[in-house]
Image 1 (cartoon, rainbow, N blue to C red):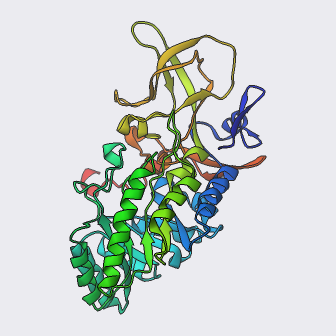
Image 2: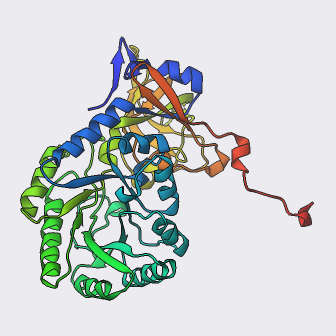
Length: 418
């Protein structure tokens, strides 16, 4: 479900014309529906209503502080993977005791920053990291709450770049040796062991791999309790997919029921880290056609958005549905939708059947709310796009478009080059 619908041949976000927004803010820009964001969060959260749980939105999917605020004000927490994401979460009003800190490479200053609040827990990914946190917490006179992120070696059947739970991946601790690391953690004076964590991958459209991972996590939690290590939290990560093209992912209710059936009466608070499933279909990228180049063996629709704005098609070969903002009766062509960047990988779609577009018309790249702006860059010295949020019949700019001065912020020419 989302709130991007045609009205009399014009695409709207909730009750506001997308064409009207483009006239005011320019292109390209990311556009989000507040109603969709709230509805998706509520659907996910309510699916786990029968058990103690905390939904920690995965900030890496979309870290705009206004987007984070949508979930924070509904009682959600935040899953962060850097000091910068923690900073954003706090600026959005998140409660520290609802923040979990994941990631394989936490720097000492980031660990200190998180301990100052303090956050709910660190998801620790190696024995060396565990010892580092213990030492830093000791110097600060703090006690660091931790869960060990274990690698359950489950194949999520997704793109290899977004698998995170196979033993060949860099993430987590081998589940077979994790008990030794838990015993080590329980002996460290500045560590408090409170949970088990895992994450097997992203854009999963089948509950099977999730169930397999839960089976292994539950078995581990029971073994830890037998060792006298009390586990209060089980963090099952995120990864539930969305429909980009022809995928048929399970509804959050089905996902939740499958996990809860497997967990049984384990008496732990569940932590969930949804990202894409909440924001993916709640946002689009709006771009303007610059030129149409037809003829020869290929047709190209050249737009003002590029791989620096939305890298998923170039990086993963992913499919993003593209549709005109204004419908018209016109012939269709097969074309590549490409941007201005000097790379052959700069495309938003390949060999796509689309209406014949004219310069100045608008296209909507759908399902772009997750890993869109958050993965954008300034490659080719292109200012990053604006971000806009719609609430019914009003819109708000939640990130201004960068200008050329923003591109060189922090850069200096030293005196030797004067």
